[in-house]
Image (tube, rainbow, N blue to C red; front, side, top):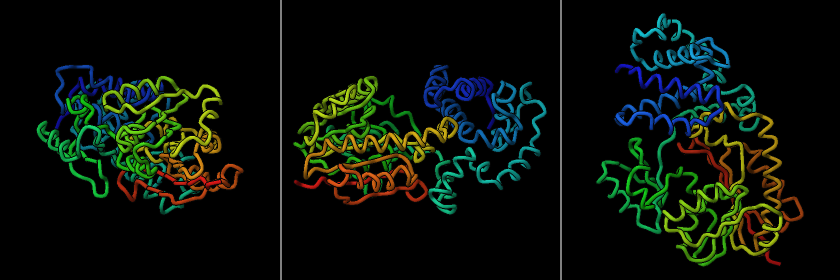
Length: 405
């Protein structure tokens, strides 16, 4: 187990882009993995996992290394040295790693790990908010779970095949998967692999989608032939799942504020063989008004803090600000009031987020049910899913039905 200079240099360059230039970790990692065609899978795995690990534990490693933002290259090397020592790598005799104080690093790790915000490597405000909303005991478990690397979960595209046939196809490519209990379309990868390079992916046999994210479309209770509206479709992971549950029969309207996201969804839909989707950009209020009381089912996958998906997006711990969460709660209230009018009498609505905060979830639904439009809805059920209980992403979903007139 030894460190290779070219892999470590790429890691340092990538951390500089994420920490000092504001780039998103997933984009930086994708770019880094294309740097050298001669790298094998273990080289690429080292680069990707090391970047994500240091991003995830940024605050803790910076405290141990005694460096402060903005980090210069020497600072980044010191943080890398902390990672290497704590992971048990022998420190090579490179100029940048000279004088790495191994015993001091281990001692500071033990000492700083007594403070939860440092141990779990999160901003103080996030720790305070988590305790306030979930309570000390639940939050402590939840943030620890959110610091575990996310598993890779596939969702079988049932428009093109079964879970069993997909599993066999992947087995032929030496990609081993396991079934997930009570998840009709999910497969979990036993080991990380770049599934996007496989012919099975290019042919649209599956999408990569977290296990709990896969529950949302099923919660909406769609049937073939319905008119369904996904109001915040984005790049369309849940839209494509809905299309497969509708068996391509009926009308599925995918809406978003951003044309670029819908263009991405169009490409994915083509690959998936999902052809019952219409695309509408929400560029005026008329787009929503035209659909008032027209849909059997409406999904509001609301914009949120993303505090249920930190394991998947560890850099959002450092990009998120308390003011953003205050603003996003206002947006959630507005979209719930506005988009709920699309549901026809007798139709159903699902409000969902990838947050674990009650203020973004059940409290939003309770507040909505007291509004004029909300009084026309009956609360059916909701699901609060914590990463600490499920092992996957944190999610919330509430099912409401519009009363018949």
